Image (cartoon, rainbow, N blue to C red; front, side, top):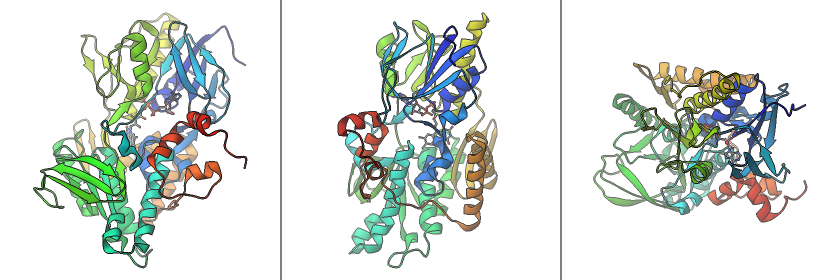
Length: 477
Ligand SMILES: Cc1cc2nc3c(=O)[nH]c(=O)nc-3n(C[C@H](O)[C@H](O)[C@H](O)COP(=O)(O)OP(=O)(O)OC[C@H]3O[C@@H](n4cnc5c(N)ncnc54)[C@H](O)[C@@H]3O)c2cc1C
């Protein structure tokens, strides 16, 4: 039973930042409400494995309620922020998927960890054609698109159509793009070998388009080069110094002058490709813009709000923002942008929680300091790159490190065991057990699957509360 006399903390977002904040507060003298528009914590670093059939959704997501079973002072609420009333110290809520929520939530302290979303550099019309692996739903859409492309190629009437279906374009050569491209290549070359009769899946082309002159710009150049070599060995074509300038249902237009194996020296050209995966720009959650409007906090080009050194909001010491949606002002007044990775969000979530507890105990509080434990990216089976302090690893050792780290941080013992077993099987037999073409929208609405599901519908899925209002309640099963 909630104790109304205790300090009330509301945490928005059960992702990496929010979850750590709740865990660090849960044994304190506080009443916590964790609000999320999803009823699960999603391990985003592995959504690309769902998108390529290596893992199933339930293996990388964990119900938020289950994490806090037995924690009487933690309440989990399924709902969405409709409005922040910082002066009145309350959040107005709106329902998700027709599940009613209280109109508003009062708080004494508030932690906002709303994360980020992909940005299409001002070309929102590209969303319809370039799917992404940010959410579980969008990863399932990518999975359906990739697998249906092979199905369509099998029955395509002419070589041009077949080639377009067997061309996969991944936009963005950061960790997600590299991982995605490597996985599609493995799917085509290893997993699907022998599954089709008219086509050879191994003839599929995977193009990884990156505007910079190297992949993985967050890593040292030597590891970028190793990653590029590993990808080429897998059958991926990295196209460096190339920018995507248009995307439609039939393919992409690119501009560049880089030296690549698809034709060096050309300036602008079109690539016929029926499957495009977007892994490029990232923009902060809309909640950052709302906080900026309410507090006058500075926003950068990616929409991240600058928070105070202790992660609180200017003029509102009781409100904290953490994770992908923030930059942090240093004590000298400059603003630091941390990489948009899970460890930053986790450490910031814990820091905000500790600051609240210190204030309640009358102890001093401190500025946030990030402890950088390293950087990892996997390329494919047995291949990865890792930078841990001064240590630079590549190949199998880096891959093992990547594997252990990801298993360690995966939420839920059962998920760790299941993912480990899946990876062990895949390593031994090149298999991918979850190669299913599904249409989550159709499932929800009780109609047959549509395979060319657009990103507009993925967007729709991301905001179930809004979809509900637009289309009325889903038919009873
Ligand atoms: C494909 C992909 C691969 C990645 N790989 C890696 C990796 O290998 N290593 C790494 O360290 N990082 C990786 N990252 C980055 C990492 O996932 C993020 O940095 C991290 O998730 C940020 O944590 P967060 O708490 O800020 O946001 P999130 O973890 O995104 O959590 C935000 C939460 O807020 C909820 N929410 C948002 N808005 C609202 C609202 N209005 N109302 C209610 N709830 C709301 C969301 O449902 C979500 O649960 C990857 C990201 C992606 C997309």
